[in-house]
Length: 126
Image (cartoon, rainbow, N blue to C red; front, side, top):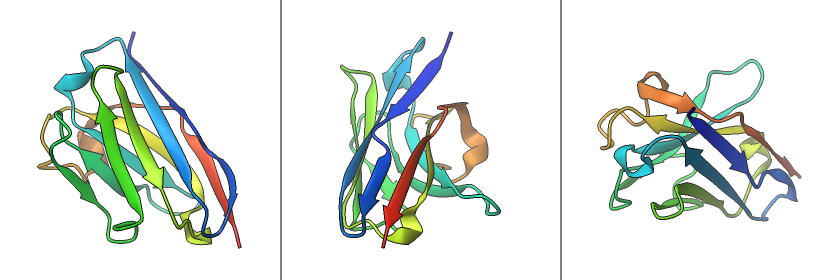
């Protein structure tokens, strides 16, 4: 059984930081590129960041570039999202997902992701 379990969400003031973690079990973690998406009610699911199978390449949405950093530890089957200088508009439920590909060719397209976590709430107060 494949599971993606996120953790690390919470409430933080604007300008603060949070680190999200997501652990995959039930599959070979290093086979997949991994991505983070976020969603707020009434909006479409938004791509945040993605990282290829080795961790050697990453991509970011313009809205988070220079503030967020995605990384992975294949030995721990875990992908991370370090979020700095958080803004109220970053408030959302954050989801990690496993891409059916190992590269980043379609990483911003949610439809290529085959496994999803349950989501973790991030709330940034002004």
